[in-house]
Amino acid sequence: MKEIKIEFDDKKRLRNVVLGILGSILLGCLAYVMIFESRVIYIYPILMISAGAILALFFSVKTLLSVFNGDKTALILSDKGLLFKGTQLGRKVGLVEWCDVETMRTETAFGKKGVYLRLGNPKYYENISNDASVKSLYEKGLPVTTDELSIKNVQELESLITKYLRTY
Image 1 (cartoon, helix red, strand yellow):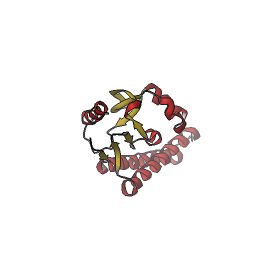
Image 2 (tube, helix red, strand yellow):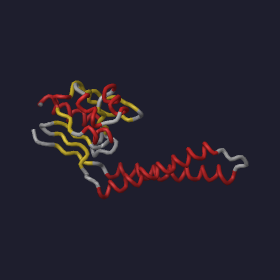
Image 3 (cartoon, one colour):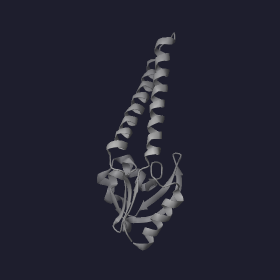
Image 4 (cartoon, one colour):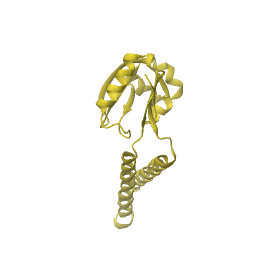
């Protein structure tokens, strides 16, 4: 079978950027009101809200830069294996060979529906990731989501991965 490259959907990514910027503006306004308009100033909530606004703005700018400057390929299915660049964990793990995939299932976690690939030997990938990522690999498997992909639904993604799993 030939190699399939699935690209990021720029519309979905720009939607995430707009939501992030709106969220940071909203949190910034809330922090402003808490600092300048209230009679009693609570430092801890103000710091948390301000940190949330800064983080939302940071990740929005990072996503915006990746839309225009980054690699457009999000998922590569080849005879060697699967390479998913849509999440931080997927980028750290890198190429997952088909022989390492034990099971595949569709599941919803943290509000995101995706295909989870349970790896037969996750210890091979431990040195690449941090403790939380390794725990996620052991418990759930490697998530492959369609949040920012040009694929419309999870069923289409699942059928593509299943076709490659059966072949290799």
